[in-house]
Length: 429
Image 1 (cartoon, rainbow, N blue to C red):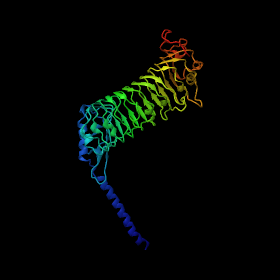
Image 2 (image 1 turned 135 degrees about the vertical axis):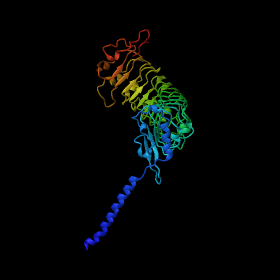
Image 3 (image 1 turned 90 degrees about the vertical axis):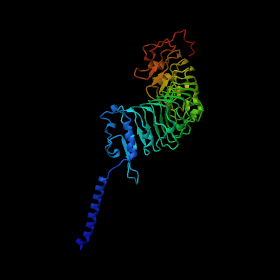
Image 4 (image 1 turned 30 degrees about the vertical axis):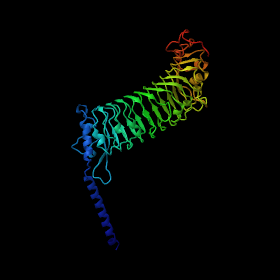
């Protein structure tokens, strides 16, 4: 009886095993087919590249359109099989930095509706960016950095329907203004436009509520940047705009409207007025770089510097006068200080010297690891703590001041000679 009852069970198990094998064979025999329009867009990209710039070892050289892209291309293409579809769709195109020279066909952006990632970075693509059609609504990352694209950034690329999160157009030859339509990119988190030839003023960006990282360095942008609140979104963590023509004052209210900002770098612009004391009491700001501008004064921190989160402060190469700001020595986390090439006068505060000569942190502050004071009108006696500075200690420079008794046996006294008595004002240490 036991053997006869087990027979149906064995037959069912055998049938199930055969069915599983047949399913696996059918899956193995199934042909992955790329949507024809997607394959055509990939083919147009390869055709737009000068064949002489496609090395045999490169990714693009392996694109053989006698085979199906999604099934057979070994690199550079990512695909996705939508539910209830017999086709695979291209979701990513990423070329290696092999020195490809060519243009970007409009079909790559207009005919790949599922495209989420496009990178042609660090090659030699040139010509204008495609205009007339918006970016694919699913595109999240566009990286065209490190090429030779020229002309203006097409306004038609950007619409409120875009899902773009990262935009990299740096190190190209783009010109003209930043189109105001870029402000419609509500999902954008990072925008890098540095080292182009962009001109004009910055469009209002307060609606870009996801933007955290903005780099505009090395362009020819002008106008004001932080003269009033609301010009930039409060979500920003890092604002870098070195080497432009931004002018006007730096307002405390504009800084307060950016509560998450950790990095502000406006080196090499034309920012004027005073450095607001609010910058030193900002709840998040860790790096403040305002060197080589036209700043004329430094306000003291409202709490004397005790609440400052700054780790680095660079105010070198401005027009700052008066005594060295006392609040700098009270900032507990500050380690890198640049106050060089200004017109500061008077003596060097003992607190500065103590921070530079310290062997380690105290319960109130960390030591200065870099203290640049050269190129001012500092005078008086050297603080005794500086004479105890070790050769392998903090990097300190007092060159080109009014310190004739700064002995060259100390490394911080070397460099440009001290100013003559005729150049130096009366000393009030």
